[in-house]
Length: 243
Image (cartoon, rainbow, N blue to C red; front, top):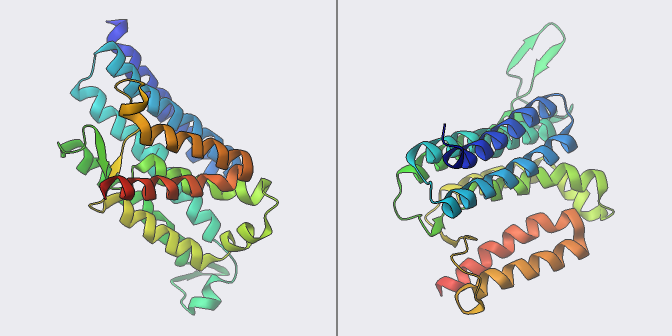
Protein backbone atom coordinates (compact mmCIF):
# COMPACT_ATOMS: atom_id res chain seq x y z
CA UNK A 1 0.00 0.00 0.00
CA UNK A 2 1.25 3.50 -0.88
CA UNK A 3 1.16 5.39 2.42
CA UNK A 4 1.21 8.77 0.69
CA UNK A 5 -1.95 7.95 -1.30
CA UNK A 6 -3.62 6.48 1.78
CA UNK A 7 -3.27 9.50 4.10
CA UNK A 8 -6.33 11.43 2.76
CA UNK A 9 -8.46 8.27 2.81
CA UNK A 10 -7.38 7.51 6.38
CA UNK A 11 -8.51 11.01 7.40
CA UNK A 12 -11.82 10.42 5.60
CA UNK A 13 -12.30 7.14 7.47
CA UNK A 14 -11.62 8.97 10.74
CA UNK A 15 -14.41 11.35 9.74
CA UNK A 16 -16.68 8.34 9.18
CA UNK A 17 -15.64 6.79 12.50
CA UNK A 18 -16.37 10.05 14.35
CA UNK A 19 -19.77 10.26 12.68
CA UNK A 20 -20.63 6.65 13.43
CA UNK A 21 -19.83 7.05 17.13
CA UNK A 22 -21.82 10.30 17.09
CA UNK A 23 -24.84 8.36 15.76
CA UNK A 24 -24.64 6.05 18.78
CA UNK A 25 -24.52 8.95 21.24
CA UNK A 26 -27.29 10.85 19.42
CA UNK A 27 -29.61 7.83 19.56
CA UNK A 28 -28.91 7.57 23.30
CA UNK A 29 -29.79 11.25 23.75
CA UNK A 30 -26.20 12.32 24.47
CA UNK A 31 -26.45 15.22 22.07
CA UNK A 32 -23.54 17.25 23.45
CA UNK A 33 -21.13 14.34 22.98
CA UNK A 34 -22.60 13.75 19.51
CA UNK A 35 -21.95 17.41 18.66
CA UNK A 36 -18.31 17.22 19.70
CA UNK A 37 -17.79 14.10 17.61
CA UNK A 38 -19.39 15.72 14.57
CA UNK A 39 -17.09 18.71 14.98
CA UNK A 40 -14.16 16.29 15.09
CA UNK A 41 -15.47 14.56 11.97
CA UNK A 42 -15.77 17.89 10.13
CA UNK A 43 -12.18 18.67 11.18
CA UNK A 44 -11.04 15.43 9.51
CA UNK A 45 -13.28 16.20 6.53
CA UNK A 46 -11.54 19.53 5.98
CA UNK A 47 -8.05 18.12 6.21
CA UNK A 48 -8.60 15.05 4.04
CA UNK A 49 -9.20 17.30 1.04
CA UNK A 50 -6.35 19.58 2.09
CA UNK A 51 -4.02 16.58 2.36
CA UNK A 52 -5.13 15.22 -1.01
CA UNK A 53 -4.35 18.56 -2.70
CA UNK A 54 -1.09 18.98 -0.82
CA UNK A 55 0.14 15.47 -1.68
CA UNK A 56 -1.38 15.61 -5.17
CA UNK A 57 -3.17 12.31 -4.70
CA UNK A 58 -6.72 13.34 -5.52
CA UNK A 59 -8.80 10.55 -7.04
CA UNK A 60 -12.28 9.18 -7.64
CA UNK A 61 -12.07 6.76 -4.71
CA UNK A 62 -11.36 9.56 -2.25
CA UNK A 63 -14.18 11.64 -3.72
CA UNK A 64 -16.75 8.86 -3.29
CA UNK A 65 -15.48 7.86 0.15
CA UNK A 66 -15.62 11.46 1.31
CA UNK A 67 -19.28 11.78 0.35
CA UNK A 68 -20.17 8.49 2.02
CA UNK A 69 -18.52 9.66 5.24
CA UNK A 70 -20.30 13.02 5.04
CA UNK A 71 -23.68 11.31 4.65
CA UNK A 72 -23.17 9.84 8.12
CA UNK A 73 -21.40 12.69 9.91
CA UNK A 74 -23.23 15.62 8.32
CA UNK A 75 -26.46 13.88 7.33
CA UNK A 76 -27.54 11.07 9.61
CA UNK A 77 -26.35 12.64 12.88
CA UNK A 78 -28.07 16.05 12.36
CA UNK A 79 -31.28 14.22 11.44
CA UNK A 80 -31.22 12.20 14.67
CA UNK A 81 -30.38 15.31 16.73
CA UNK A 82 -33.34 17.18 15.25
CA UNK A 83 -35.52 14.14 15.89
CA UNK A 84 -34.47 14.14 19.55
CA UNK A 85 -35.03 17.89 19.93
CA UNK A 86 -38.49 17.64 18.34
CA UNK A 87 -39.50 14.66 20.45
CA UNK A 88 -41.82 16.06 23.14
CA UNK A 89 -44.82 14.76 25.05
CA UNK A 90 -47.12 17.49 23.75
CA UNK A 91 -46.51 17.01 20.03
CA UNK A 92 -49.56 14.84 19.38
CA UNK A 93 -51.81 17.21 21.29
CA UNK A 94 -50.68 20.10 19.10
CA UNK A 95 -51.01 18.24 15.81
CA UNK A 96 -54.03 16.24 16.98
CA UNK A 97 -52.57 13.42 14.92
CA UNK A 98 -51.83 9.94 16.23
CA UNK A 99 -50.03 7.70 13.76
CA UNK A 100 -49.68 4.47 15.73
CA UNK A 101 -51.03 3.45 19.08
CA UNK A 102 -49.63 0.26 20.56
CA UNK A 103 -51.05 -0.30 24.03
CA UNK A 104 -49.99 2.86 25.91
CA UNK A 105 -47.14 3.76 23.53
CA UNK A 106 -47.61 6.43 20.88
CA UNK A 107 -45.36 7.14 17.93
CA UNK A 108 -45.24 10.85 17.18
CA UNK A 109 -45.09 12.19 13.66
CA UNK A 110 -43.44 15.57 14.07
CA UNK A 111 -39.98 14.42 15.27
CA UNK A 112 -39.50 12.47 12.02
CA UNK A 113 -39.58 15.78 10.12
CA UNK A 114 -36.04 16.29 11.38
CA UNK A 115 -34.90 13.37 9.21
CA UNK A 116 -35.61 15.46 6.11
CA UNK A 117 -32.20 17.02 6.64
CA UNK A 118 -30.64 13.56 6.27
CA UNK A 119 -32.38 13.06 2.93
CA UNK A 120 -31.43 16.55 1.74
CA UNK A 121 -27.79 16.00 2.72
CA UNK A 122 -27.61 12.68 0.88
CA UNK A 123 -29.18 14.22 -2.23
CA UNK A 124 -26.78 17.17 -2.16
CA UNK A 125 -23.73 14.94 -1.77
CA UNK A 126 -24.82 12.77 -4.69
CA UNK A 127 -25.29 15.88 -6.85
CA UNK A 128 -21.92 17.26 -5.72
CA UNK A 129 -20.10 14.18 -7.00
CA UNK A 130 -21.38 14.65 -10.55
CA UNK A 131 -21.45 18.46 -10.67
CA UNK A 132 -18.33 19.76 -12.40
CA UNK A 133 -19.18 23.37 -11.50
CA UNK A 134 -18.20 22.94 -7.82
CA UNK A 135 -14.45 22.53 -8.11
CA UNK A 136 -13.40 25.87 -6.59
CA UNK A 137 -16.68 27.04 -5.05
CA UNK A 138 -20.01 25.63 -3.91
CA UNK A 139 -23.53 25.73 -5.27
CA UNK A 140 -25.83 25.35 -2.31
CA UNK A 141 -24.90 25.20 1.36
CA UNK A 142 -22.26 22.52 2.05
CA UNK A 143 -23.51 19.68 4.24
CA UNK A 144 -20.89 20.30 7.00
CA UNK A 145 -22.11 23.90 7.30
CA UNK A 146 -25.73 22.78 7.71
CA UNK A 147 -24.58 20.15 10.18
CA UNK A 148 -22.74 22.75 12.26
CA UNK A 149 -25.95 24.76 12.62
CA UNK A 150 -27.92 21.75 13.86
CA UNK A 151 -25.22 20.44 16.19
CA UNK A 152 -24.78 23.88 17.74
CA UNK A 153 -28.34 23.71 19.10
CA UNK A 154 -27.74 21.21 21.95
CA UNK A 155 -24.53 23.05 22.84
CA UNK A 156 -26.40 26.35 23.07
CA UNK A 157 -29.05 24.74 25.26
CA UNK A 158 -26.39 23.21 27.51
CA UNK A 159 -23.85 26.02 27.83
CA UNK A 160 -25.27 29.35 26.66
CA UNK A 161 -26.51 31.90 29.17
CA UNK A 162 -28.54 33.69 26.48
CA UNK A 163 -32.09 32.76 27.47
CA UNK A 164 -33.61 34.12 24.28
CA UNK A 165 -31.57 31.67 22.19
CA UNK A 166 -32.65 28.73 24.35
CA UNK A 167 -36.32 29.79 24.14
CA UNK A 168 -36.16 29.83 20.34
CA UNK A 169 -34.49 26.42 20.13
CA UNK A 170 -37.06 24.86 22.46
CA UNK A 171 -39.84 25.95 20.09
CA UNK A 172 -40.60 22.90 17.94
CA UNK A 173 -41.96 24.99 15.08
CA UNK A 174 -38.67 26.88 14.88
CA UNK A 175 -36.92 23.52 14.56
CA UNK A 176 -39.30 22.44 11.79
CA UNK A 177 -38.71 25.67 9.86
CA UNK A 178 -34.94 25.37 10.41
CA UNK A 179 -35.01 21.82 9.04
CA UNK A 180 -36.89 22.93 5.93
CA UNK A 181 -34.67 25.99 5.37
CA UNK A 182 -31.40 24.06 5.73
CA UNK A 183 -32.70 21.26 3.48
CA UNK A 184 -33.59 23.85 0.84
CA UNK A 185 -30.30 25.75 1.11
CA UNK A 186 -28.23 22.59 0.66
CA UNK A 187 -29.84 21.91 -2.71
CA UNK A 188 -30.58 25.44 -3.92
CA UNK A 189 -28.79 26.95 -6.93
CA UNK A 190 -27.00 29.47 -4.72
CA UNK A 191 -23.28 30.11 -5.40
CA UNK A 192 -21.21 30.16 -2.21
CA UNK A 193 -17.47 30.72 -1.86
CA UNK A 194 -15.13 27.97 -0.74
CA UNK A 195 -12.52 28.14 2.02
CA UNK A 196 -9.97 26.32 -0.12
CA UNK A 197 -6.72 28.31 -0.27
CA UNK A 198 -4.52 28.12 -3.38
CA UNK A 199 -2.21 30.66 -1.77
CA UNK A 200 -2.32 32.92 1.30
CA UNK A 201 -2.05 36.37 -0.27
CA UNK A 202 -4.50 39.06 0.86
CA UNK A 203 -5.30 40.03 -2.73
CA UNK A 204 -6.53 36.59 -3.73
CA UNK A 205 -8.20 35.69 -0.42
CA UNK A 206 -9.59 38.96 0.95
CA UNK A 207 -13.12 37.61 1.37
CA UNK A 208 -11.92 34.45 3.09
CA UNK A 209 -9.71 36.34 5.53
CA UNK A 210 -12.52 38.76 6.37
CA UNK A 211 -14.84 35.81 6.98
CA UNK A 212 -12.32 34.04 9.23
CA UNK A 213 -11.63 37.20 11.26
CA UNK A 214 -15.35 37.86 11.72
CA UNK A 215 -15.80 34.21 12.71
CA UNK A 216 -13.18 34.51 15.44
CA UNK A 217 -14.78 37.70 16.74
CA UNK A 218 -18.26 36.18 16.82
CA UNK A 219 -17.02 33.07 18.62
CA UNK A 220 -15.27 35.19 21.25
CA UNK A 221 -18.41 37.25 21.87
CA UNK A 222 -21.20 34.70 21.51
CA UNK A 223 -19.44 31.33 21.94
CA UNK A 224 -21.70 28.50 20.71
CA UNK A 225 -24.43 30.92 19.64
CA UNK A 226 -21.89 32.21 17.12
CA UNK A 227 -22.07 29.04 15.02
CA UNK A 228 -25.43 29.72 13.28
CA UNK A 229 -24.44 33.39 13.02
CA UNK A 230 -21.22 32.40 11.26
CA UNK A 231 -23.12 30.29 8.71
CA UNK A 232 -25.50 33.20 8.11
CA UNK A 233 -22.49 35.50 7.62
CA UNK A 234 -21.04 32.96 5.17
CA UNK A 235 -24.19 33.09 3.06
CA UNK A 236 -24.39 36.89 3.18
CA UNK A 237 -20.75 37.34 2.16
CA UNK A 238 -21.31 34.98 -0.75
CA UNK A 239 -24.21 37.12 -1.96
CA UNK A 240 -22.09 40.26 -1.63
CA UNK A 241 -19.32 38.65 -3.68
CA UNK A 242 -21.81 37.73 -6.40
CA UNK A 243 -23.07 41.32 -6.58
